[in-house]
Image (cartoon, rainbow, N blue to C red; front, side, top):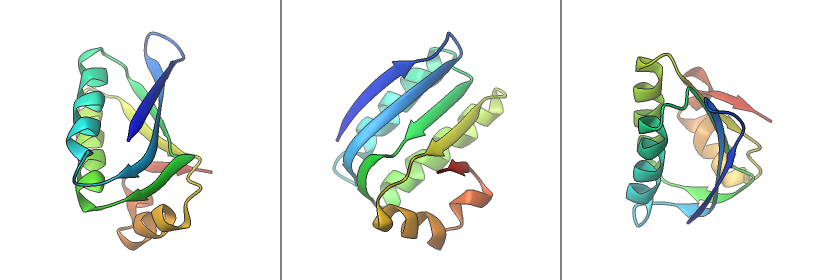
Length: 103
């Protein structure tokens, strides 16, 4: 998994992971997201355009980050989910009820 960053402002950033998010690299995603948390970004947009798969460990990292970000009045948005596999995973766990998901 590779992650690109696009800084919008001093409080907003777009994170663009690519490839598969699974047990082998979910810890890297967690570290990358927590680094953003420590940098005081309040709005984090995850662009999932190039994410092909995600497993339960990746989903857990997203939920953990969402919770931590909300604790400091921040917001996590997932956008541009292209993969039908990822969409299905999000639907199965009703992720849209917890995290805002935009097309």
